[in-house]
Amino acid sequence: MSMSDTLSLPVANIEAAIECLLFVAGEPVPISELARALEMEEIPVESALRSFQVTLTERGSGLNLIRIAGGWQLATRPAFSEVVARLLTRTSTKLTRASMETLAIIAYRQPITAPEIEAVRGVSVAGVLKTLLERRLIREAGRKQALGRPMLYETTPDFLHYFAISDLSQLPAIDLDTAPPVSAEAIMHGNPSLSTPISDEAENSDQTEDTLEEN
Amino acid sequence: METVQGNFTTSNTTARHTIFNTPSPHFKTAVFEGPLDLLLHLIRINQVDIYDIPIAQITEQYLQYVAVLEEIDLASVGEYVLMAATLIEIKSRMLLPRPPQEAGEEDEGEDPRAELVARLLEYQQYQGVVEAFRTWEEMRKKLFFRTAMEHTDDYILPVPEGEAHVSQLYSALMRLLSEAGLEEQPITAVTPRRRLSLRLKMAEILRHLQRAGEEGLSFEALFDLPCPRYDIVLAFLSLLELLRQGRILAFQENPKAPIRLIIIALEEPNEYE
Image (cartoon, each protein chain N blue to C red):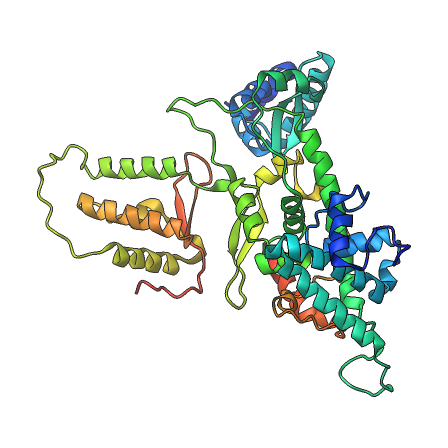
């Protein structure tokens, strides 16, 4: 089927087709995948998604179309959450504060090693990392080219999904420049060079930045 | 001390009672996420400027908390003791008279608290993020999604992020086996014992992939068809082991595209040689 054939479909049909795709997928579908299935360009697909979003609201549907974890997905409307929760058995638990803090640090400084996280939090993170890995909120992202080749960690699409955001750019802006990363070495050796001016840490932060850029 | 909101007292035992057994508004449920969390809490309740921390006062309160912690949770006290040492070091540095300005490698004018403040500020920012995360988590819990049903064997969803799924590797293996005409072979067929071990095969695959560089190789290229079933199985096992060890990566542009394999760390010495 050529593209012009599909494009000549009435808008309502494209929306219906999108509804089908999102219904069967059961996970966030990137626009590229929708476009591939619809044999359409991504831009018209995106506008069809937007108008489908409006259509759902106008028809008073119990479903809502949201952008989440790098794709589009049908979700129940928050207003009906209690009804749905009564039907389903609740299994999920909230993240602990330790998990939250660790996740926050990883989200902003990924990829990041365990000692680097510990330098920020001031406490060991081994157990927390294990939990976060098990919950698939983070994953291993290779090893840092540094002494001991420590494992690097980054957030996953499941992380985005857990907080219902579509990508990392939606994270609240923070100003890490006012608080330069503390060298992990200083913490590990238990002797932070307290008199060292902050700017002297350029070497350490350079290393971190390099890894960030590679990613 | 007595004016401090946190109800710290000078005796450790009393402090414990104050902190954990009486309905003190601040410490009844105070469980800290570590030394920085505790420090920020002390700064907050004492209403002092984070850029101008009264080190003596804060250190004293900090040590009292650590003493209490020592009695109730010895395991986690270590992390706090490190910070206590840091605080005491800062305190002693601040007590020392400033040596006359001499051109040295160290900037004598530097506030001994500077690095601690920087750490506290960074940590505080992440605490702010945690608040946002909490709100999002709460909102997200109001959303429900349809979980994907089992799809028929004919269709599977694309694997996210271009990574090949185990089942796709499996179907590729099955395709190879059938191409090699090995499916119909009677199980009584005699295969001569081969010397090649898994280890050697892994080394061989790594070598091939190293040579292929970033381009990588197709899944099929690893199999020298036609060849005995043993070789196919061995190559496949080596492949799985290398994937498990995270030394190679299997990916696929789309579900119909050939599976491609690339080596992950090119500079890594091939330890199976």
